[in-house]
Amino acid sequence: MTSDENVSATFKRAAAERAVDFIQPGMVVGLGTGSTAAYAVKRLGALLSAGTLKDVVGIPTSRATEALATSLGVPLTTLDVHPVVDLTIDGADEVAPDLSLIKGGGGALLREKVVAQASRREIIIVDAPKLSPRLGSKWPVPVEVLPFGWRSQALFLESLGARVVVRLALDGAPYHTDQGNVLLDCDFGPISDPSGLAAKLDARAGVMEHGLFLNLTTDLLVAGPEGITHRVRGA
Ligand SMILES: O=C[C@H](O)[C@H](O)[C@H](O)COP(=O)(O)O
Image 1 (tube, rainbow, N blue to C red):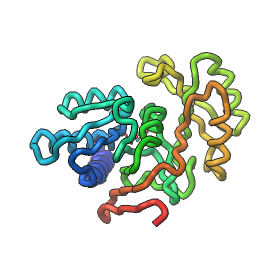
Image 2 (image 1 turned 90 degrees about the vertical axis):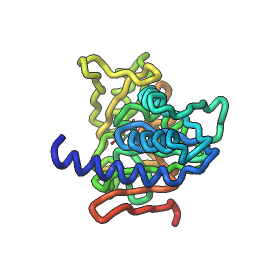
Image 3 (image 1 turned 120 degrees about the horizontal axis):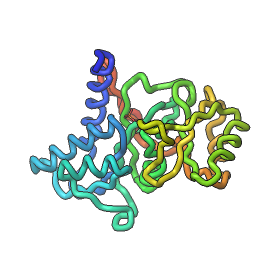
């Protein structure tokens, strides 16, 4: 790890551990995906195994998070059993001043959005470099599409102004999400109308989900050199 990565990891961990303080006994907790959310899962696992926190069940947002939580002894449940989630803790790739997000750098955007929409409270944890004046300035929008006809979707996304890159797995083959879909990383540049873009993506058959998370964050915890800042949407 470079020293920059070490600093970033320290901040991610600090934000994640603060978020876990919001978990109360008896809660159903959405478990996000990615390096930042993993710190929260690890902290939750440690508190549960120490008996400091009791009767919490988690709903993982990816197979990777499910495997991590299981390895730590975090009891898991499903949205079928618990269709309403008390609190979800998740990371993000880019955060705008209105707490809208780009997510999906780790490929888990679809399940993450399903869990976020089922959550009473969605706590997003990031390190400060992820803050952005406008979505799209730092990160492409991942768009999850059906394998059937995915090249047509790439053309559609280009027609909306994106530079489209097919996400690849480590072996060089197209990456497949937990649902078996293809991910197209779409660089739109700074996005002037995220809601309008989201509406166009939502209306397209074959687009299963996209990484624009609008009006879903309730709380944002940002860790940086000055400590942790807690922002609440609408406050
Ligand atoms: O699909 C992955 C998720 O949206 C992640 O929460 C996001 O990519 C942030 O990941 P990380 O915490 O590793 O930067």
